[in-house]
Length: 284
Image (cartoon, rainbow, N blue to C red; front, side, top):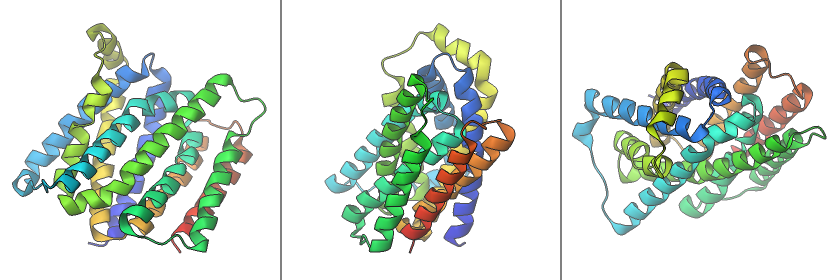
């Protein structure tokens, strides 16, 4: 099956994830508690897929120091991302977060240059510049609240983390296989999210309030990520990573339509157009 089929499936899953994730984050009184519940749920779902799909029969890990180093870095960067993602989505609306997320493409490209010797052509530099301009456009608002500025900084930090992690996914599928790598990067980063431990009472409050939606977000994330890894196994990272950012365009449009995120609507649309054009130049 072509990589584009897997990538399109991943785009659909992640678009739904961004929208539902925003509603969960807004209602959350403790974003880290939400992150703990989400990741615990995602780990269980990933393990169920791993077992019942028969993928456990193909469990394979390259145990060389180089391979383990790459996997450890992926676990660490995904851990940082999971630790901060719900805080970022609580402070920023879904459409803004999706646009800021394009910075992860830029980071992934820079890392891919060093990891896979992928050349940085003039068109890719233009694309990277447009993504940075889009980031500036969406963050430029004279009426922006202090919490939004903090949210923007958190979002940039988690997007840098996930950008590094994305660049390692291609390597991870080569060193293991999509199913094995997926289960590793779902289970191991949980350590960075869970500790220091939160009171059980705090976790129960979030479970009662939002577990059904957290379950949906976890399911979408596990499915979308597995589809993404299968796409990486079948295609080039420097094409697939930007292509996946089409989910940001869909999130902006659907966020405006269904989440009533109409503040700064012209800036958002202009920014997402810039970002998509930037992505187009990146894949040239």
